[in-house]
Length: 98
Image (cartoon, rainbow, N blue to C red; front, top):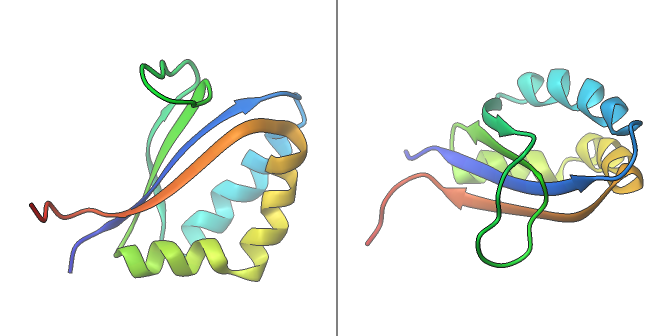
């Protein structure tokens, strides 16, 4: 089974965003996810994206989607919504299928 990923970009608008990070990190580990890349000064060269870019790995795309849809994550995400803009989250399969 292929791994799954969250590809996230956002623009932090408030220092209180750290509350989201502090809640998110232990939560993502508890559901089997792992932050594998993070850049606080990412450069979007096409489309709209934020300065913060994060890649989070899960055991499968299904696990990544299930994690996103969990009620506890949706509650934590309120901290992100309150302290950032231009958020994009893409959930993808980690295999190359073409």
